[in-house]
Amino acid sequence: MTVEDTPLDTTQSDSEPDFDGVDLSDLPPEIEAKTRQLAKQAYVNDLAATLAAVPRPINWRTLPPDDLEHELLDLNAWVDWLRHTYGLPAQVVPPMWHRHPELLWELSALRQHWLFCFDPQSKGNQALAWHHDFAIARERLRDWVTISGTRLDRDRATRITPWPGGETDDWTDTNTVERPVTERTNDFLTFVEEQVTGRQAEQDAVIREITNIDWSDQP
Image (tube, rainbow, N blue to C red):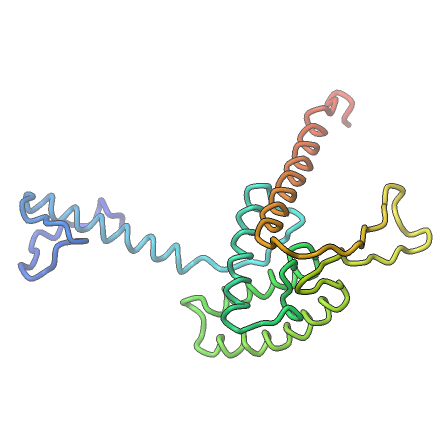
């Protein structure tokens, strides 16, 4: 039964509060009842949509440019909350985590797990489950930080070990020169801009490749 098919309730109790602080008493009874009914249905629909949203793993390799920017900003805000809430040292979450894919993927997975465990529909024991996994994740984060070489006051790109005869022709060794960390927020915003611009270029290249296909040559 739809909202339109539902009989109007014109027997509104005098004790029922006005909807959302708006005085509807001056409206004709039928219009007042219809207004309340539509407002309540909209609230139910919004609530259902909110509760039905299940956090999914984020594939950073395939996000469109706009989604990439949105997710990076959200992750950064969550990581900032995490390190302040739990007093995490730079050995676990360093300032330049965003410059190291291994840390970005690990922290992203941890955030999605947190969103799932603290969802309003989750079971009561999910908070404990997340803290259990958080303890394990902190050990992995320490390993990643050690391997990457990033620190509180200085940063370098994670070293990649080239395989003899195993790299592509256009592969270049990573620049691992250390640089001081002074303006972390500005660096993060620059990083986001770089990533979005690069992803947009990738997307444009794919579109150009598709549109330049001579379909007459296709089987």
